[in-house]
Image (cartoon, rainbow, N blue to C red; front, side, top):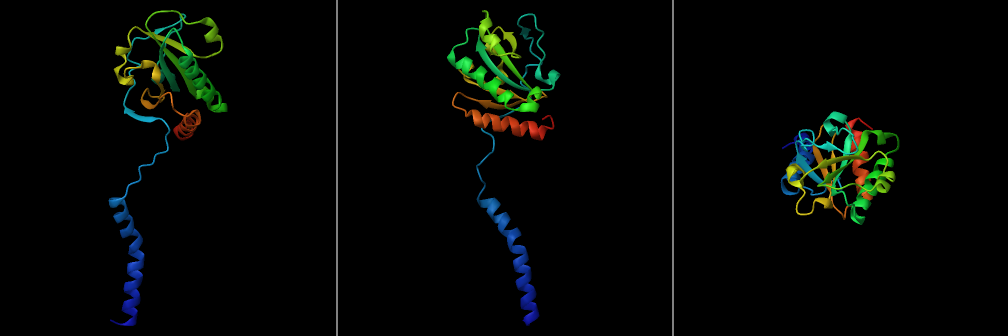
Length: 188
């Protein structure tokens, strides 16, 4: 083998090494990291647009796919305990933190069962939309589990469930998720 053939072979090996190395690395090691802070849900439809939800206080309920907004949703009874109040507070603050993009985010409290909501609580959450469902079992797509009040759901403008946050979710993580989704969805 001549000197020029050795040089050409060495050049070919150096040029193909990164490509071959990347295929080997991809086959052996796949990173498990992700950038979202909530639990990613891959459900096509939250089912809220198909359900017959009653608006509360004579408000007509319009589902997320009709309103074309991102929606933070919580499912609670009308007797809102401290955990419920904290979730409503988080939803309000994260929406407000979006600044000029906050008009692309809606907050919905889906009330289960009967009972009236405390008017003083509603005064602290202006713009919060209320809807009522008789039984949580009518919402199988939401994956409520045994504790319907444990989660905050994020629904996209097409009515698809995107993320679910539990009681231990970081507010900063929720804020980052929503900001990223608004930026890449072209709405914010």
